[in-house]
Length: 193
Image 1 (cartoon, rainbow, N blue to C red):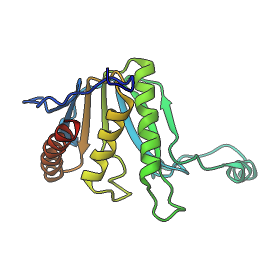
Image 2: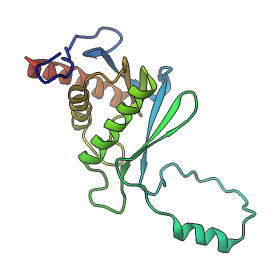
Image 3: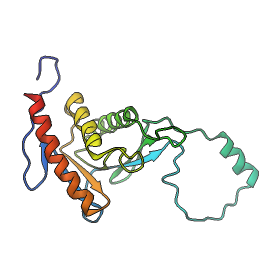
Image 4: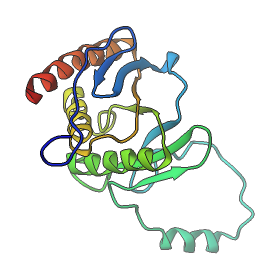
């Protein structure tokens, strides 16, 4: 324990399995080779439009009832995380608000990540799969996304996770993020001394 009562984290260089930050192994995967995990983070916007598919279904409800429900719908606050039961657990993290400029802000991502890690601690989740926070639609640079994750892991201490896997959409992005992850673990290692 450190002097402030929080667990002391130690960076340990990872090998084939990725990079280490304290007891958490951090690694990067492409969409085609994601590992099995206990929970998955899915990023969403405040109106939950990103998850809406283009499929068309016939509705038996009266159009007036549908319109009334739409008028009563409220956006979710940015930073909200909604767990959806299943195996693996899906955590819908609201990190985008397309009514705002910019549509993604570091404090929203930070709030959502803290909630994700809190849920992981409460549910004893050990492995988590997630995109780089805020990078897809919010256009956060990969380094900025990783630094948010490192700050929260360092600040919040042990969240119970043993593995965090970041998923990238292309092999090129995967290679870039893996190199950044190596340099960031080195950076955070030096900053702890």
